[in-house]
Amino acid sequence: MINYVVVKRNIHVGKTPGTKFLARLYRNADVSLDTVAQEISVATTISYPDTLAVLKALEMAVANHVLNGSAVKFGMLGAFIPQIKAKACNSEELVTADSVKRVGCRFYPGSKFMNKLKAAQVQQKDLTVKGYVAPAGN
View 1 (cartoon, rainbow, N blue to C red):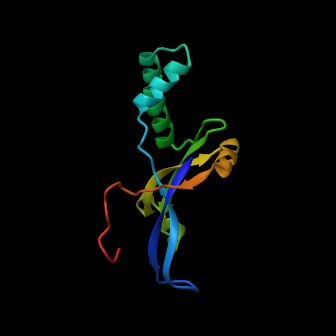
View 2 (view 1 turned 30 degrees about the vertical axis):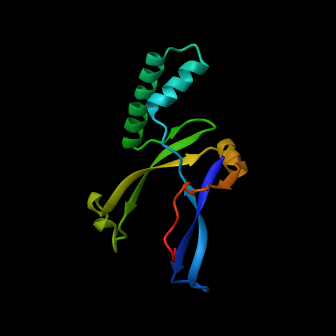
View 3 (view 1 turned 90 degrees about the vertical axis):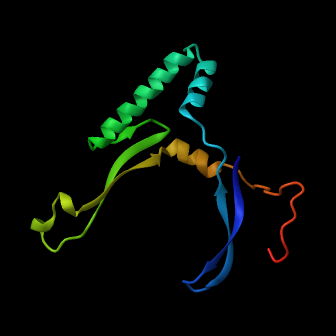
């Protein structure tokens, strides 16, 4: 289940500016590589140290390939694809490495994973703290 919270925003642009309310992702606690390694070792016959070693090697391999300009594809999961943001120049000669303003990496979900994301259920997260009373005017 994917959780969201309701937030209030003052919108100043568009056809209907004003105070609006929208859903924002409520991110649960991050899951570490260590936790994933433990889960994999429990679900398979591979020991925890071996699983952790493979996942650490995977981290390094993915980073190296992306830094060398290659996309790394993980089947149904998706792909890590390098990207750049560059300044537009008035002539071809002005396009140099200095015109590249940022290098990054983007994750694109695979089609099967994307379909699962589209079908994912969402629910509002109750952030009420027992015993806490909000000050008047909030």
